[in-house]
Figure (cartoon, each protein chain N blue to C red):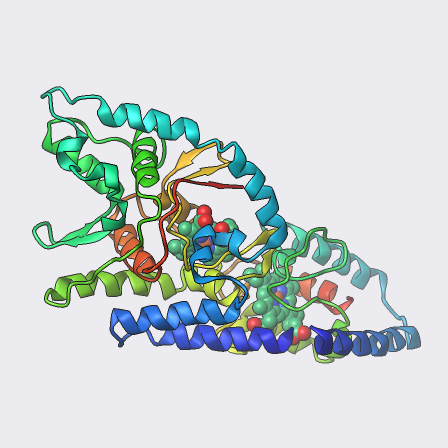
Length: 278
Length: 120
């Protein structure tokens, strides 16, 4: 066990300290190799199932949850909200014309015009603003439900985030997200990688720490403990609190850049949101 | 797993024989140990069981090694204190929070936790 731990920490070292240089593709390869070597029994695409891709017992419980998924209500609610016209007579379909074949795989993406990373949730609110509607709150509620509906229609599409090579600002956003992932912060001095890379598959008290590969594929998630559908940045904030660090706001530049890096690391994983979690 | 458990077992046996040889724990030390246990197992303080198997804690984590046979592992209490005060001095990539350096525990609380852990 000690040897395994040291090997793990060593792997973290390679991943963590290679921060400054290296094209995103080199990062992605090293990141994915780490998990596929650490969990040789998990087929690559199964990492889409997060924690449950590495633990049999929890997987059985989860499969039972998925038989009568609580997020079904949210998909239906999201569908209704999506098709409710705005005051100006337009609707979300005008912003997402391809929604039926799935659009979530196009997010997050670098938007050169806005000079920032646009996530699915931000795009929903930008659509509202464009049509004179007030933005929705980001963690839960109607926006999470619309996001769940769009995720559902995107199931099976493969994550393929791009960092356009011809725009150094896109690479800078990616690098900022990556630095966030590997920087230790907060009173407890953890980074995201401390837990999801170095301690992956281990128990933090009774909680098994899941792999970062595939972590973004099933959002938004219906969390049993929170009893509602919630967005990815709600999980970011919850983990920041585990570090006893201040969390950045939902859809803050920091979290969008973090999502840009975090999702790039899962390129090749099929989308399977929304998901159920404990 | 195997090799590590064997080491733990060997060390546990060694520690047991040391403890048997001379139990001279004073009443003061005993109360330090009790207070240290409370701090170590308090979720808002040490929360050591988040990562370590530790006597008296249910559902422990396993991110760090089990805290057993500590007298044998740390004959020098100062080294044990240093590990708890700021483990990153010993292993820069450690996952263990720097309890002293980041003020998660006070100096006095760390002294008590050291007494408790050393008694394990």
